[in-house]
Image (spheres, rainbow, N blue to C red):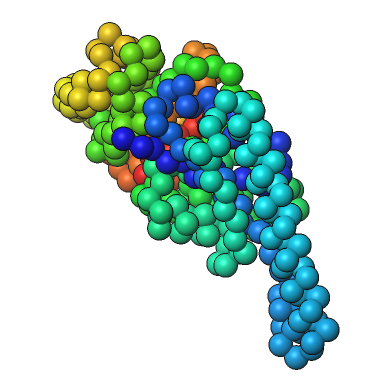
Length: 309
C-alpha cells in the first residue's frame, strides 16, 4: 500500500536534515511518496491594509507576493533535485507552496489532514531565531495540535538505523505500533526495541506520600506489569500481521529514577537509537502530553522522534 509523507520545509539546514532522513526512510518503507511543502513568508499586515486604499501599495503588495511564491518554488525545486540525486525517483516527489493563511503550523496540519498524509516530517529548528520568537516554536505547535497525523521531528543528522518504540501498555502506544507496523510492513531485516519504563508513584501523583505508602508503589508496579504483559500479546499480533517476526523484536525495561521521559531519552542515547517512537499520550492522557512526550521532544537531539497522537 502506498505511503505518503508531507515534508514541511524551508531553506534551513534543519530542513535538509529532515529530507535526508525521509530519503533514508525509503529503505525501510516500501512504496513511499513525498510532498515537499512550504508556507510562504508572511506579508506585512500594514501593507495589506494600505493596499485597500492605495494603488501603489497594492502594486507593491502583489510584487511581494509574487516574489515570495517564486522564492518558495525555487527552494522546493532545489530540494527536489537533491532528493533525486539521493536516489528518489522524480515521479515520487511533488512540490507545493502556498501563502500563509492562519499560521504556519495550522496551515501545515490542515494541508496534511485534507490530503490524508501518513506522517508530517519536519526539522527540529526549521525556522530562523527571529521567526521562532515572532511565531513561536513551529515544532511545538505541530506537536501540540496534531490530533490525528503522526509527526516525525528530525533533530540534526540522524546516522543510526536503530529503532526504539517506548511502550506503556496504553491504547495510544498501540496506535504507535499500528503506525510503525503499517509503515515498515514486511521488512525482514529491521530490528526493533520495545522499551518500557516501570512507573513510580510520583509519576501518577505529585504528592509525596512518604515511605509508609510503599504498598501503593508495589500495587502500581504489579498493575503496570499486568498491563504491559497484556499489551505485548496484542503487539505481537500486530507485528505478525504486518509481516514482522518475533525474532526481530527485543524487549527492554528500566525503572524510572527521576521521571519516565528522562529514562527514555537516556536509553535512546545509551543505545544509540536513530529513531525513537512515542505515543503522544499514555495511560493518563493529560499526564503523558504534559510530561513524558514533551520532555522527550525537548531533550531529544541528533535523532528522529516520531510522535503518535
